[in-house]
Length: 64
Image (tube, rainbow, N blue to C red):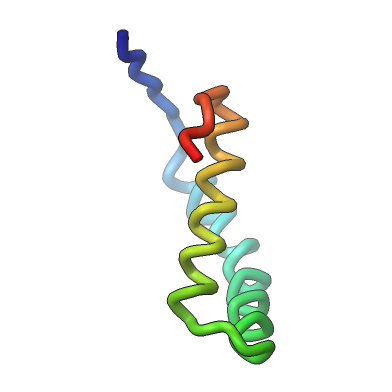
C-alpha cells in the first residue's frame, strides 16, 4: 500500500528560507571541495543527507 504525502509550503517562505540557507550551503560546498572531494561527491553526499533528514521529518522509512 502506498501513501501519498502532501507538503504545503508558502512560496514566499520558501524563498526567504533559501536566501538564508544558500550562503552557508555554498560555503560548505567550497570548503568540502577544498578538502579534496569532487563537486559531484559533495553534492551527492549533501543530497543523501538531505533526503535522510527529509524522510525523518515526514516520517517516511529510510530506504538506504
